[in-house]
Length: 323
Image (cartoon, rainbow, N blue to C red; front, side):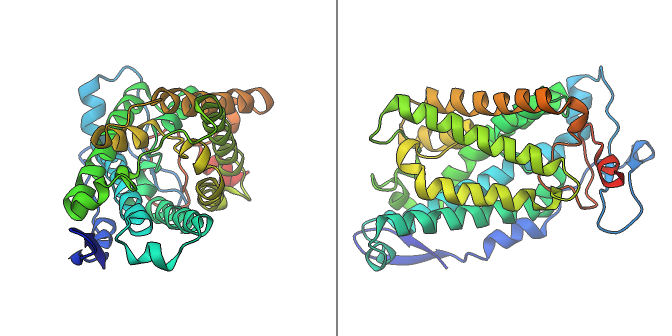
């Protein structure tokens, strides 16, 4: 059960945790009147599904009409990620939570937070929505794939807009579920802020962890033998970062994730770090990949592509599988 922390130490049940499963059991529709234009990439089981041919020069409205399901999926995915972050942070850090008293070791609580968020990431990536949208959930990640020519301009713009909207909606939903508990200064809407080492160190830390995550995603997702392990590598990094790096920078790697918490928490101090370091780190990763590999070495822009969901990117995943 998700428990609502209200007045004093009183816990009241608010909503079953199983409500999250409802999101994963639903599939957003997408237009099928242009089904004749879809390219079926594979015929075997467990392979990539439908690839939508990219047409340069399409208007904003044409792109939005064709790909709106993916935009909503991206929004919902980050929204659910933020709900998980707020619930976990409230349970582990609110002074009236019994979990805080059961688990007194701060490092252990950080490790549990990391494991919970890594599990959330895996669930979202492997959900029907994550398989279809690519589960970027991060404007910096989308920007990187745009630089690598795997996503069209308008798709990238809409992805980033809906990621910001979804993150904020997730935090507001958390407030409705948890009430003032999530606003407590020890929880603070799960806001990401620089730690004691200071702003400069936080900037460098965010840049480095973003660079390492993006490099890992590129190296694994574009390797035939390793591509299926990409979600697990990303989740492992998230769990490790939250456990050990969060005290330095708050562990964001994501401008939309940080802004979502910053707005209700009014935590705008040093927010520029999270709008500059993660995109810069991921763009550096893309430039390094292009220098030592090539643009042809990037096959798609999804965390999980071994499925039958449609793909709106400039997709060559079937070529990777055929190598």
